[in-house]
Image (cartoon, rainbow, N blue to C red):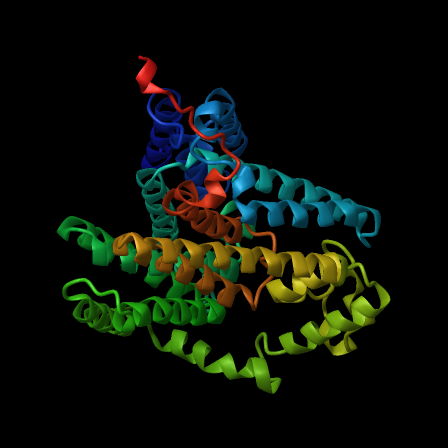
Length: 447
């Protein structure tokens, strides 16, 4: 049996036992393990029993939520988290669109998968109830994409100068989608390296090397843009924020220098040649440059289908709205190649506005959390929330050029911010206390 297969089975079984007897958050870690390792699509898959590992992990989360519901509800209440309400609204729009989807069977199937994702997110929100638990989930995410970076290194590029066929369960092996999910880890690692001790710093450098090298090998332009924007967002706050720790600016500058040196080391001519084609997106050149035409066609589709066309509807109808040259030698239509236009085409203006409301709500609760942390002078947690914001921004930038409106990574990044807001802000604010009964007052004079 392959060493990776044995390690996976050991971690999977250990996680289940830890969830049952130590901490319920271990169920979330088991789910993350299965999601990132994607055992059914691994080269060592034949060495492990053919179980539904993802289903077992999800069932474990729901089981732990059920048996510990009262205890967990005292620490994390769904009704007090506005972000979760918008997730439900988006799900309802997808369910409503079952009646109007162009490819009804596909839409119904993927809506069912999206419903399972929303349920998992709701369960995880209650299971991750402490700073330590949140940190564990962040490190599990980092470990997962580090493994993917290692696999990218092991597989190497194909004849097209890219790495395909690896990644998480919901990427289908698409390199761009995999790289987009890897990028946010770099921003989170920047924070971990800054705040951690020497061992943590070395671990961050080790993980960051595999992740950055994997992104380079995959050669995703959108992921490269996302990494640049997200990292600059966080580092600019480190340098220019008025809330400074000792040596903070110097550390930020050192991180920039290490990042530049690492970029020079892991990148090659093939990578920079592909990055030079970023301008093709705007000028109508080759290799993915026709995205603007696909984006504009979305508005033509909506004129005929104001409610949207459902999942895969744009692909089905694209030959009716795009020039014939895009379909020469193709048996299937074209996708929108943008998360924003994907949502717009699938669930129309109503669903698109719900998605925007979800993101606005996320950044709004994050802003309130940061303000609370400033008020209580918890600057370490303040910068953690900033790092989570930068991670989400990096993904949104990368996802602007691929279809990721229903991706697990998008909703997990939103979840991390929602959990942080609950741990650091909601529990101590009027939002978290206004619906709780006031404590009983005892007249000690009669005792």
